[in-house]
Image 1 (cartoon, rainbow, N blue to C red):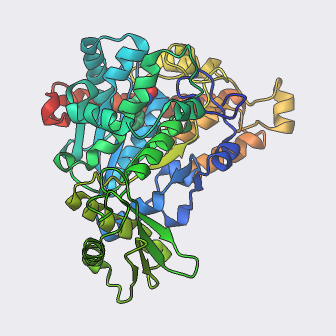
Image 2 (tube, rainbow, N blue to C red):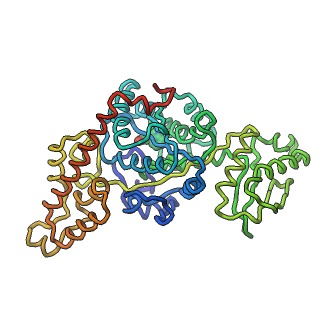
Image 3 (cartoon, rainbow, N blue to C red):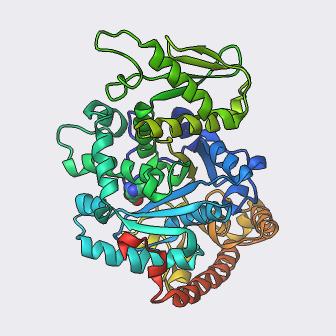
Length: 460
Ligand code: TRP
């Protein structure tokens, strides 16, 4: 986060003041009791915030369709940090979501100078191969490339009309000298995030995007832009219930019965309100208060938790009438695992992380050299105990390698009481990491030559 309180998605430094980020950007807290079959990232508080996750949880409860979208930069090597997002994607997939994976080859070309050919090669061998090994199900996974999906680029242009340079300045801190490649990339990412809702890619349904907080600016931008396209707004009523209001804009004013001189055609309005009520029929409300002239439909009997479904109904109507009908994306945010040297993890600094194809030997060396929460001498360690909040070995067990909560608890307790020494907890980490890496390597072998199963039709 910079001094103006912005998050820079391209920065090499990350803020880890998660509570402040959550409050400043209005993210929701995760209520673990509402999460079905919570995974270790949920149980251990490592997924710490969200936007509109309740919309997705509602879909899970009702077995309604929802999508998951994730994206990767096809440059560099895949490491542990990247695997956290895939753990979340897999969890959403197991709960019924269909998965779309963006290969951000245009973004890599624009911001890093990676050629499209190199980007493709890197994406498949380095990332998709490991996603397969980490357990994504090819039956409901579609990998695509930004460069070969014109619908994404078309959306970037269409939706670009709904934002301007001042908003980019406010969100990203762009200035006069900002390279235009950086200005284009967020708009393409808006296209990535929104496009699975297009009819040709699965149709209207909520999409959740699990990310690290560094990507939240893109989500804020996308949510803002999609809201601006809405022809109907759903609001909470002061005196209970929900209301739907018309949002009259250039592209719908005629359809909404507003004539050149600003007069409202009552017949057209009345028929729109009839259509609205028909669209809302599945919700089973008996009572409406219509004010077609002012473009307000009150639903006193609607409950707060009906909000997402009411919005889906009116978005479907918007589509029938010729609007875009786009649901704002939902998102979840995870904490970053600390780098092994105590600073940020980065693929350009191999000593800060473990790569998915590191040898056991290289991994062991890194763990042995990793930042420790132990005391300088054995005597002091026995007396004062280790500090789990700083210890890389403990945290990697917590984030990645130890699946058993009780075992993790025991290790943490013994380390903090001084019973386990720094070298001993490192050895436990090495043992677990060895199993993890060799298992992953076996699974990669299983998927050798079969990655096409994960690719969308337009990407083979
Ligand atoms: N910008 C992302 C990165 O730097 C990659 C990306 C492109 C992405 N499109 C996306 C991530 C959509 C999530 C969703 O890694």
